View 1 (cartoon, rainbow, N blue to C red):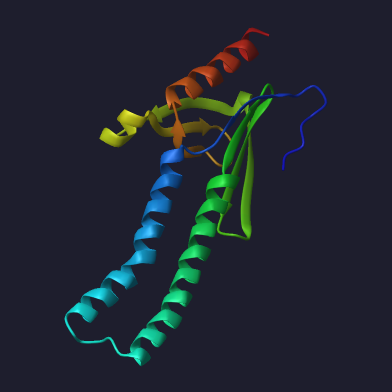
View 2: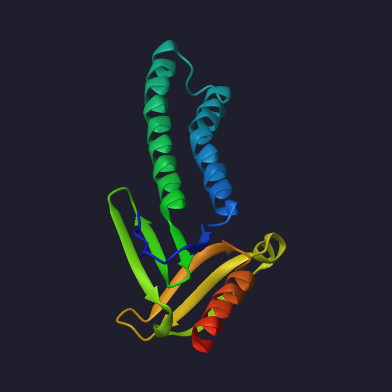
Length: 168
């Protein structure tokens, strides 16, 4: 998706932590099973259970599962295509919004003013993921990547690159 310059090489590619994908799968499974649970509760209460209601339920449930599957596919697409690519010259950010909108930004190292990260909450602390913020002097002043593994290490690597750039 990005074209590197002649003497440019990739140092690190960052994607969201696996915990986000697992959460989306778990929620999709719950939403897929919810109609079955509701139908069984009404069935055991004796409110529905004739052949017509079962047929209609199976048809509507098939449509529901198809909808949940499509939503899960959109989640996966966003998860897979969102990335940060750190090279020896600059940082490329690729953000996928839905299925048909992608935003690609380039952060030049000489424009970076500040790099901070945040890990908040018990889950993020246990699984060691959080958000990384890069503040620049460009037109778009703040870049954020949410839910990356070990944001302190990423911050350290970018700072090392910045230090090497300033020494030269």
